[in-house]
Image 1 (tube, rainbow, N blue to C red):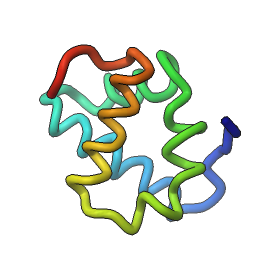
Image 2: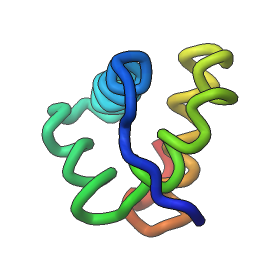
Image 3: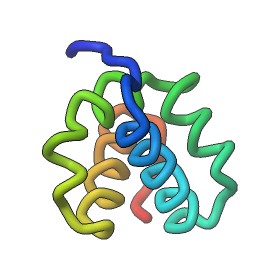
Length: 81
C-alpha cells in the first residue's frame, strides 16, 4: 500500500471528520482514535488519505463502518462495535 500524507485542507478536514466520528461511535476520545490510526497502525496515511476521493463521497455511517472494519482487520480494534 502507498503511504500518502495530507496535502490539502479538504483531506485534513476529512481526517478530522473520520477521527471524531469514529471516536463518537466507540465512545472514546478523539486522541485515542488518532493514536490508533497513526501510531498503532498507519491507517490514516495508507488507507484514509489515499482513499479520500472515494470515501468522502459516502455517507457518514458508511465511512465510519468501513474504517472500523479496517481497524479490526489490522488488529487495532478488538471485537465488534
